[in-house]
View 1 (tube, rainbow, N blue to C red):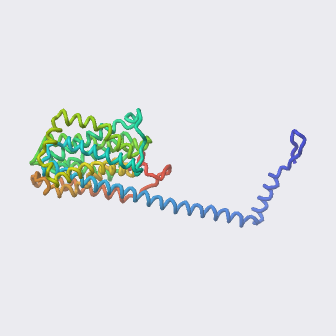
View 2: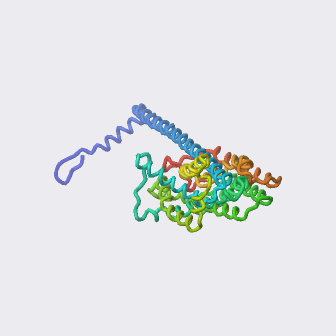
View 3: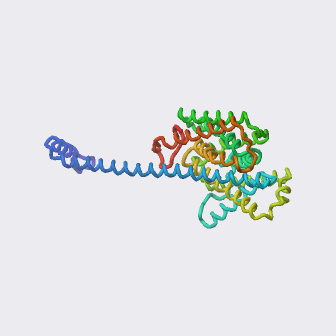
Amino acid sequence: MSNTRGGSTTLDLAPLLDSSNHSDDEGGGGGKDISSRSNGSHSKELRSGSFSSREDRSIYLKKVGSALFYGLASFMITVVNKTVLTSYKFPSFLFLSLGQLTASIVVLSAAQRFKLVSYPPLQRNTFTKIFPLPLIFLGNMMFGLGGTQALSLPMFAALRRFSILMTMLLELKILGVRPSTAVQVSVYAMIGGALLAASDDLSFNMQGYTYVMITNALTASNGVYVKKKLDTSEIGKYGLMFYNSLFMFVPALALNFVTGDLDKALNFQSWHDPYFVVQFLLSCVMGFILSYSTILCTQFNSALTTTIVGCLKNICVTYLGMFIGGDYVFSWLNCIGINISVLASLLYTYVTFRRKQAPDKQTHLPNTRGDTV
């Protein structure tokens, strides 16, 4: 019993409760209660464990699904672009990139109007929030199309694998992601195969090689910065796609006008050919789909995985490209180097998607920062 300063008395029941608990423990009377608490705690752990397992499966499906979607989109746009630029001899890859920017703006604007997607409205600091992604996005698109036009698809596919090494180094520097030994071995094997193929490229084109290497650097930067902006910016993936295209439309139009590509494209003689028009429009729409699939794959996986999947689709592009475009010149050394690079791509795929995925403790969405790729 304890006295309060106001003169009233209150009962202190703590000693009695403690004594009751001790006697129950010693006499065994509390065994049932303890057991029930233990069973309740155990059942909670089981329920939590099964929920975590379902979450892990969901995350794994998102990882694999987004990677397959990106690979298919990347394959389709490479083939369509090659057909438009080489088979039909369309004179301007700059004008084609302008068409892809236009398609992205129109599709996303319509989707937001019909409430299919949402992204924040344009503000004064929007460009600052997503910089330098618009510049990287435009450069990657233009130089990628330029390389597609200038090189055969097998050689283009082999040289594109340099972007993997660049992405791996940038992820280590910017995101703190350290690749495993198996990943490094597969990446170095891909680069070695590409170098071997390039050493005996009978259709060597210096301009095409330059375009592809610039595209490799921009692809690596794009993947890493998209991951960073998705983690830190409230604009979201649809906002990134829309504002990247919106901010770069006027510079792309000005570049087409200054270089004379606008006139060459508008005066192209095959505009009356419905097959060409369909493939040109398909290329423009596929540019939007590729942008969406790139961001989706980067969000659920990592920048390096997005880059490697983009190169994996080149397995199909490599062999199909020997028949599409008609600009591939066969040599044994070149063919051996290309196949080494392809096999190394398969090795990386096995290492990446067969390893056990550890769940992120902070969020149900995968986070590559600090993880081993």
